[in-house]
Length: 473
Ligand code: ADP
Ligand code: ZN
Ligand code: MG
Image 1: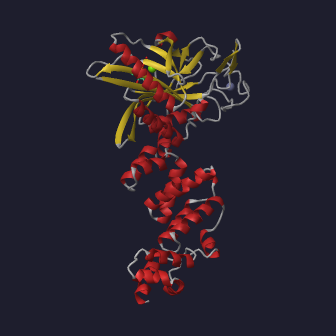
Image 2: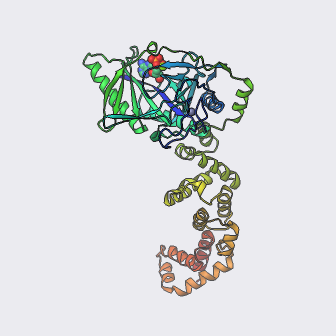
Image 3: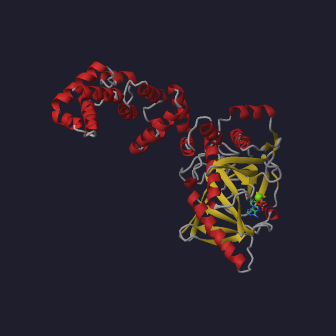
């Protein structure tokens, strides 16, 4: 029996206004080389100034992932020659990462799984090389953009589990607001380390796969690499420690380079960046400001609110939706009903109209009021749904809308009685059939009465009165 072992290195570009060591704007898709200055171009005489917001974001990520936080922030130079780094080195944290020994616990397939976070460090991003037509163009807009690299322990064992972890990690970063996590724009990038070994034997040699720009590509790469390594081992061959590039279309990976060793980078402390201490007061402040995290919310929704795993997952998957849900539940006092309405009806509107909840006119107060009106029997369920649909698109006052359009439910027995009388008079054949034992006619008579009341009659009262009046007639 073979076992697959997976550890990840995940980069997030931080959503700061400016770069890590200069005042240049941190923005995607600007015209090439328009967001650069002497510092991020590595020109002589320039000096870096550390971006405080980037440090705060990295600390937020570290605290959210339960890490120990270093008392000092120190940077090292990772030296290599490649044109994407104008300095000839990347500024990173090799000897003393900002955050160590964390973990992320997430709920997946009805079970709880914990993945160790070995470290999180801060570093700057490289520029982009654009190859083509025998020339390589360089865009340094991205050079110097702040990154955090999250390194996990080798704690995952399948593609499915890895993707579930990545989803939980991504959602955590989105809730914190530290990165926009757009894989297609490179603001979240995943490297997969994978080895295969026989259960009971030591871990195998790992390969590292880069160039994975969607969770689907991550899963595909894992499945292919797992198979490739197993076949090598079964044939008695050896897996080499190397970096491979995965081609998602062909489902094949190629050797990019042999794994470099740390020595190859000649790490040494960056003499331009003095050590900065992490003030306890700053840490305390950040701890207090952390939002409730998605995995905490999900557990709360399942165990305290009584929602199903799937419903909890759907609501938590978008921070705005989760907040909308909690507020709506508070307004109407019925969490399950609030969840149902949002998942079945409101999300239906979102998909239908292709606009987000925040762009719609619906507010938690309004949805809460609609739910309350329905629960109090003041409007029917069907009509309450229609009101929601209107309130999604237009700014209406719910109570006034109900009044002005005469939508309130009819519960007055006298009004219902006269409607039933009319139906019975107009349908002598149906009444006769009912008396002759054709009981299914009952439903037709109820339906006709509802129609007579323009769909606004209270169904239970209609049922009761139809029954009574059939007995009498
Ligand atoms: P290096 O120092 O060579 O970069 P690390 O020990 O820092 O290696 O690990 C890098 C990544 O590789 C981590 O995400 C870790 O979980 C993963 N990893 C380490 N050993 C293995 C292994 N045997 N199989 C799969 N992944 C591994
Ligand atoms: Zn700059
Ligand atoms: Mg490493």
